[in-house]
Length: 229
Length: 229
DNA sequence: TCCATAGCAAGAGCGGCGCTCTCTTTTGTG
DNA sequence: CACAAAAGAGAGCGCCGCTCTTGCTATGGA
Image 1 (cartoon, helix red, strand yellow):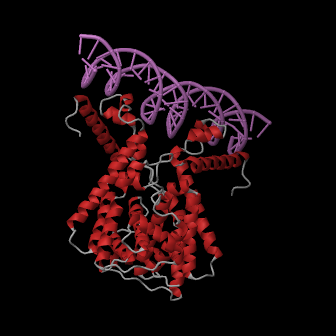
Image 2 (cartoon, helix red, strand yellow):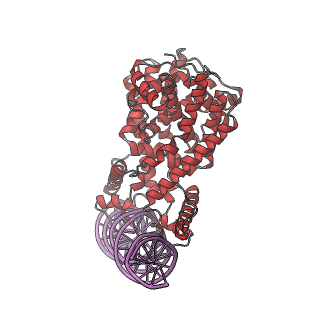
């Protein structure tokens, strides 16, 4: 696809990539709010108006970075999971959780861009959905495997939540009990709460030795979903 | 203090309050990133440079809004708790959780300002610490009461976390078992994970009937801390 | 009571931002 | 080779945060 194209097309993809790389550099260094099209253009030796040939607005550039961030995070989680693919569900679960945390600590501004407060006036386009789902799918897969092997004891589910849990099950994991799906979605959100609090400074002077704290919390999240091994 | 002052001092506090009010209006309407000193001044019929007599920078104005947001949230949580002060610990816990969620849904931009990604380059001054602690103290108090009445069964604690848990206990709640304090801090972060995911759109097309979902999750958080009634 | 002073509003201005428009140059194709 | 499409360059518009200077006025001490 990308090869065997004219020189013009090749140049276009190269310049687009260079813009994204420089933008990612500035994002990592300064954060999304300080990311400026003019600065990116300046650094690349082009004039700012020329950059609009490649990204029609700052938001479009941000969207590209968001997709890349989701993909990078998803890849990190999948790679970590792959390394322990033969282990028990509990270890695979905690490994993925720790990989997500590790990626977040290594890429704080990218994490903030993706899981922090959304930029006001900005609504993520549909394109971001598939890469955003990768970590969630990974966790679902781990629980599904465990469930097939009988290593999941479904938690309780109040009647008020039954209908919604059935709906989530149909959407996300038809082969899992609704109790487990509901607990899984909650654990998923809670995982990002733990990471966000650490990353955004809420644990400052509260939690000091954060690695074991997080590890323990991740294990308890797994227990909450029903994982027993 | 604030009365019996000269006309100049009275005017100063009044104008300061008017600036904060207008800034809060714009924050609620547009979000922190779109909050502009010039627009606030314009709306108040003054020139932008005059505003710097009251707030030396945009960050200082934001800090004032952050403190107000923490106080508003803390007040909402405390008021909700007060209304069920005679109920059992579990109901008091869930009531506070739901009050926090309700406040967040009602004031999304303020919530994002406080618990979302921090503005890059901005570090919250020490002044924000006491108002920020109000909700946490409330939750600690609920668990403390329950513990005194024997309604808390301490969760497990791995050896790797013992030392850190003891430290947190000494800092936060010397009258609670370290296992409970560690679980409480985790639950506190997880609570904000649930709220943040709902507020920032991660639950879009995933969780639809969110109130019972959140209520159930809050109850399970309480169980995780060890609350039994 | 008078007056120096401290506080304040206003205006101009600096550099930076996102974005648009126009004009010129380059380049691949019929 | 001619020509249309794509790309770069530059000027400019209206924002922004922030600073500096200039007058004015209320206030508190001599």
